Structure formats: structure tokens, C-alpha cells
Length: 293
Image (cartoon, rainbow, N blue to C red; front, side, top):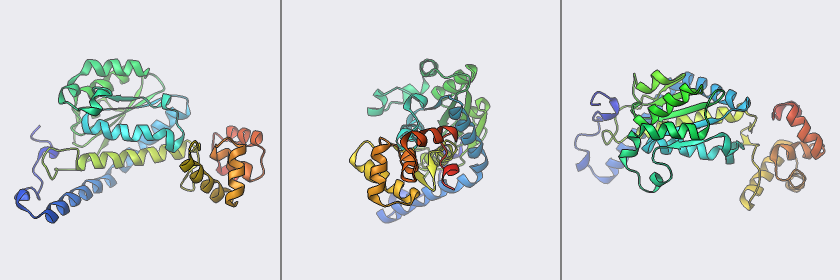
């Protein structure tokens, strides 16, 4: 463990405790920037992982996430946002978190060693052939996460492993291995800092590419949004108006006709009926671009 870069002392570490507040905060900020900088080297693996995940979802499979502690929280933050941002049904994106919901209120270290629970969680999620599981572990050696990867792989699911150290055990169980070499932490070993920041950014990058492949993003807008509250209705209207080239009133009329579905509303605003809009999107695999030429 002492050989892991995440456990080593950061160059800013010596004397950090005696620095003025502004200097401490500046050092922590710089540590975050350094951690994010490592992701340029991770781009090829992140692309490979995102394409694999998107292929599973397009084919009707599931995309699960697994992790423990801070790494699990980063995985969960990405997983839970997929429905609202890209319209992916939660039933297609199970979250496997060491300790379950109880651990969200009081995280304890012991649950991350529970390999048996990980195996049960994979089975409960129903992961198997045609599915993928994104496993996140800063050390790449967390027993819960390794067991989840091992069990999912044995069931026929593809594994995308993200870890912050080289030669991680997780990579041996991964179809796609993503090294996030974020380096030493400002507080040595506290991987909720730079490692977690880089993990979340990496997951953001992957999920945006997944969303694009699913047809959920057009011109940088979240066109799979379904407006079901006042805030989202306003956002949806702005998206429809921008993409369809209409005014706000026309956009809201189209949204009402399309029951709040943005992509259908865009085509309605461009002259389709609700029925032909739905049919056109089904024919193009949910992609808007073919219908907006």
C-alpha cells in the first residue's frame, strides 16, 4: 500500500499545517488541478469504455456502477444523474454501493471489505451477458469492488475498471482499464480529494459520450429531457426553441402536444404531428440530426 502514489506525501505536504489559510486553500486547489490534468492521458481508455457502455445500452442491456466509499460516491453521482440528463431509465442503470443506503448516512470502512455482499448485489442487479459494469476504486484493490467486477465478469457482463494507481488488481478483471494517475494527495492517502475529483470528471466525460451515442445530446442540449416540473418546463422550452428555431410560445405549444418530450416537441415545432415525430425518431434510433437537415 505504501508504494501507491495516492499514499505518498505531496510536495506541498511538508509544513502545510503551519501555512496561512489562503496558502492552504491555494495548495488544495492546485492539487485538484493537478489531478484533473492527468485525464488527458486517459482519453483513449475513456473513449473505449464509453463506446462499450453505449453499445450495451443501445442493444437493450444495462449499465451498472459499483464502488465503495468516496469512489462509490463518485460512481453514484454519475449513475443517478443519467435519468434526468439523458433520459436513461433507472432500471437500466443499477448502482452497487458497498453498505447500501445505510452507508450513505454513515460510511464505515468495514463494508468495503464485504466481497460476499458485492456478489449478492451483482446478482440482485441482474447483470449478465449484454450488460456492462463500471467499477471505480482509487486503490484498484477494494475487496467489494473487485468482487463485483469478478462476479459480473463471470456472469458474462463487460467490466470497465477505473483506478488511480498503476498495475491495479481491478485492471486484471477489466475489459477496459482506465488508469487515472492523479498522483499524491495534499492530505496523503485522502483519495476523496484529487483522486475523487479526477474520477468524477472521468465519469462525466464517459457519460456525455454515452449520451451522445444514445441520441440524448444535440448541439450540446439535453434533448432526452422530459419536462415534469416548472424548472424543467422552462429549460425544455428553451431547448425546443433553440434547436427548432421557433419562439418560446411555439416551443411550449409543441411541448404540450408532445407530452413534455423534448425531441418529439422539436419535430412537432418543425411541422410534424406528434405521431409522425415519434415514428421518425424510432426510425433513426432516437437521433435528431437526420430530421433537421
